Image (cartoon, rainbow, N blue to C red; front, side):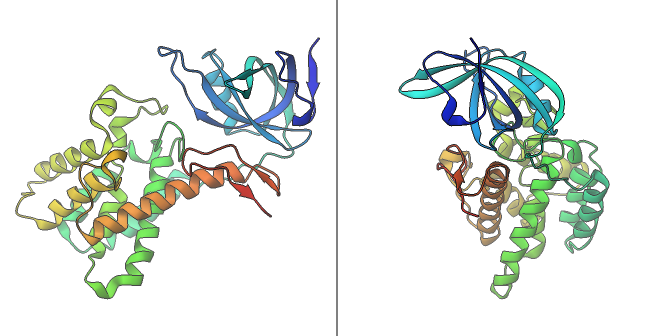
Length: 316
């Protein structure tokens, strides 16, 4: 007999079949069909507002789950409960979209592509170094892919337009740091250029649907981004080795992950590189945290997040 679940404490994890009416908050991990790793996603119970993570090995469901993350739709989820390594587990066995909309889920509207283009145009026009401005215009303003690309498969800004939103946010954070230390001979043009281009390699690391490419797996976006800057400079007839600004811009892109274990080609060795790296970390962690915490109730915690390596408490 299928048990209808209204709140999490009602769930029996002794291999039971249950049904949950819930909205889909996010895909936590897309898993791998080839490696037989399940995908994971977080739902919000419409009856109680509580959140819980589910898993599935049926990758035919993944497209439906992804579509649900950006909508208020409610879904009837059929799940099988169980324990795995002493941890409770919900395994999705069926899903049905209802005609109802969630009263509890929150969706924040992002600026439109036109809004982003205006903001980018304004900030790029403020760059005084002509070499850097030309590279920015070529790789961003003249690139039709940039404003529609995701910034990741999961974790942060994993949606169309996420790359543009994240890069602009990193730029704004980095400029705040520059304002605080601008008497210390830190180059504003490099802060802007490095922040806006730090993830440019993701245009070839990910497909538009957020899946990873082969070149992305082999090289990673810092290296790809450095190559894109070099190619752009050549097409613009700029000698990258006679322009210290282009050399440092490339260094910022190669080192923005901060640590070698996180994918940086080297450690940041200029103040501009340090600032962009820290701004990137702040925005990625803050956005991932907000995406998880905005849909839980005050006084409750999220699941353990990859970005913070901890559960987050929404205390008010």
